[in-house]
Length: 169
Image (cartoon, rainbow, N blue to C red; front, side):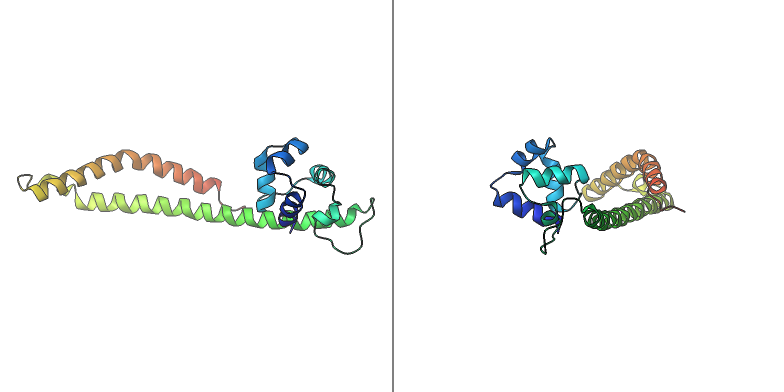
């Protein structure tokens, strides 16, 4: 809701993201992230944003009832807390997805290594006099050569990534 309100009010005031960012002393990407709902402004920036857009903070946060009193920070804090909790849940879900992606990459590397060892480099037994077999043997050899050299790096990187992105115990 906050993201949509920032975008709507900014456009209604005829400001570009760049112009609003200059008024707030932030980069344009920050305003873009607010409008996409990827992040939220902290309380100081929220107040500065309301001043730059000449709009009450309560309107930015979606309150359409009676305007809030200048000293009524409790309502603003509660709404910011809800927004921060939603962002934390999104971040946790993204972290879990990344963790399982790393685990999947580790499993795939181990599986391909097992298949290569089981095949015992069959390209050496191929008849390179036959053009079709020669091409297939060369392609397989190139894949195996490249994979064997990159697999340890990918496996270690994915393993470290899986450890770093695991959930808290």
